[in-house]
Length: 79
Image (cartoon, rainbow, N blue to C red; front, side, top):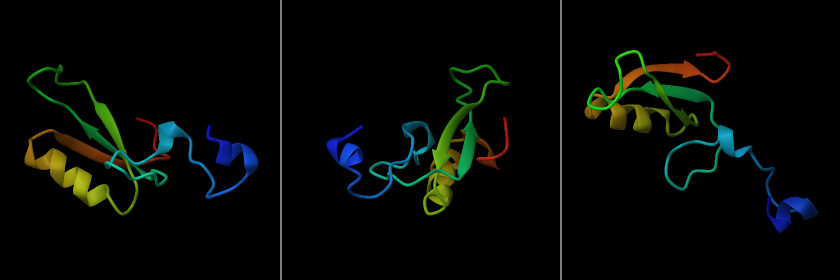
């Protein structure tokens, strides 16, 4: 929490656990991108990156290009 949060100044803060994974993006996440690195993870293991609407496609393409992307789900879906 910053001093601005304590003073009620600036934009509302988003819980750290629900922020987009794109570098320098602080927007609220609305999507879960499930991925797996087959070189180090068992086949059923799923890691999760969170994405805002603006960066969902970019992050999904990043994972897909590397053969890591498995599925994209809305945040309200429980994996």
